[in-house]
Image 1 (cartoon, rainbow, N blue to C red):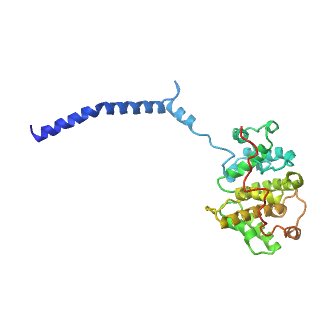
Image 2 (cartoon, rainbow, N blue to C red):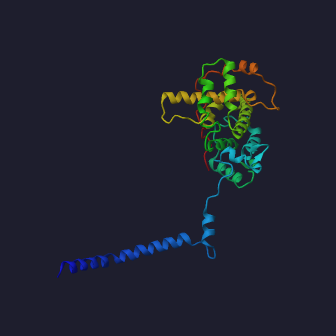
Image 3 (cartoon, rainbow, N blue to C red):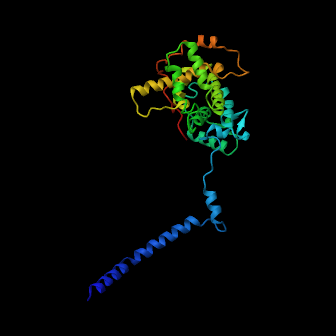
Length: 295
């Protein structure tokens, strides 16, 4: 037998040997493709693929600039989740540990989805009032970037890290917030006023400006440090101090016609105790404490 005919016979044997495997695999792929493409009886493939596409969020995880493009997403020029949650929380700001104690995660998820569906949650039926404050916090946590923006991170940190006298520190802070995008500035101004209301009830809720700063330091400012070091610990403390400073001076930094008159002299005289980073608090750590179990 010639070498060519022998080689031909070998090829035929190999093909015969693996033909069953090829047919089996081909059948599997056909079944898989059929399941992927085919939808319910009478439905077209295009309608099936469009219905399986995930619905885009309107409020959570969305840049403020995008939210502010539509008037329907706002109440009194504030994103609906922030406005309605803050309104519902106001009678409960006296609760001890508000914003420090987390809510029920499943309850927060349901309320979040209610907002995304275009409705308003029934806050009277929540099992934990901390779920309301937790949803407010969640909105800021899920922003694509911190509300103060990555671009201005070092400028915000300079408010407490710079070697300034009280007046210069206050003016530095005002110059920084004035560089925020308009939607971010509006949202931050609103939320800092909410936090100031909470801080005014510190004798009951144990959440003064310092402890609120500890909770929201990394949420409102983010961090440019990836490794946990002593330098990072100091930076996290400074982030808390920045938020504390913003809470204390929100009326001067974000003036409003509804605020009592406050000038730079009044603000700076009250800032002497908070101009330098305070020592870490034993009462709160960065982030919420999970005292309420999930369902």
